[in-house]
Image (tube, rainbow, N blue to C red; front, top):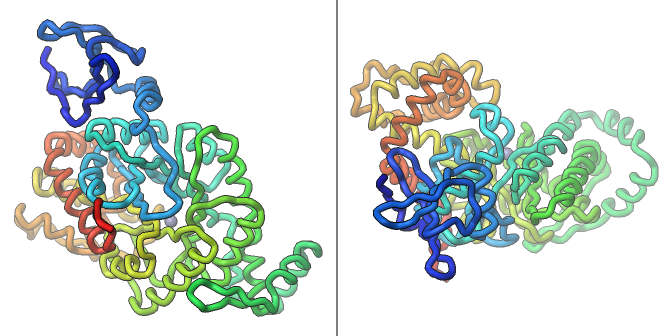
Length: 479
Ligand code: ZN
């Protein structure tokens, strides 16, 4: 038996005892030298005259290691500073993410998946956190990182994510919002508003009507009667629901950062509504670290921002002022590849925001496959087009099937150029769930990537580094 030790993984314990990861044949294993001080499940061996305890990378062993080696366990999000969600869809991207993030003053969220992503990839929160633990151990990343139960819409899922060890919960309030009131006539608003109980209305009116809410920016917000009725009807249920999810988080031992997501709706969040949600939650004792409003324009998956840049800057400035006034940070969702708005986000939010990227590592994986195995990539592109109508049921995209490039006309060398085309990017981006329903294709994807991990990680490092640079995130050691 020969051990190929991953040097960056070595952890020293007392009395020259060591823990490290090593490849034995094709498989990476946990090694303890000379003996099993952590009480992992595994077997004692002798390799080249040295005693080594060898254990598999199982969930049970991951739990033990997280307890014994603190930096391999997730932490809550820092309340200030930049934090960066890096959902790892395949469970093999994190080392590439680590090589980018380690150079910047940003707290990474290496484990971040929504229920939708779990369903489409057939993974669990336990597996996602374990994958992050192994990557962090392998790369020797010793700074705090988080695990986000992303876009959770029910108490049941919040519980599952917390039980698995998530240290961040993103409460998705979209199912309890009432966007139908966005365009309602005043008479409809009045009628429905009257149905709300008296004491609640009285309190709200005395607190919000004919008042000025000064923001740190110098601007102040006010509510007209109509605006207040609308806001209450739109958000009252959502606020109550958020409170119930927050209480569930409190049942767990670990400290959990709570994010409020009201971004998955068609209408931009008005500044008044944003402030109302924040104030009401705070008055109920809901402690949240971030809010994701729905900004003007469109943040679609895998492509640049769609909309008017000047208008976005204005909108972002007000939301940022609200977040600063009430002391939490803004969260920008579907934040991958939004290169045209990154400078504005960096300028307006300074070094205090959360941003989520997720599927972009899947696109980088496909780009790696296009470069390494054009035959497989052509099959994937074909299958993604076939799956597009189904896949667009899960994601909001404006791409149409006609936007796909006819790749038969491209040489193998030209295939990676597809990743500059928004249409092909989106078709490929949203197709993973449908592609993975074909086990042969799933196996081929993983096998090409595992054979080319170094190129995959190098490409990811470059891509994520471009995000940090455009956002003007401070490098480590910089003031
Ligand atoms: Zn979102």
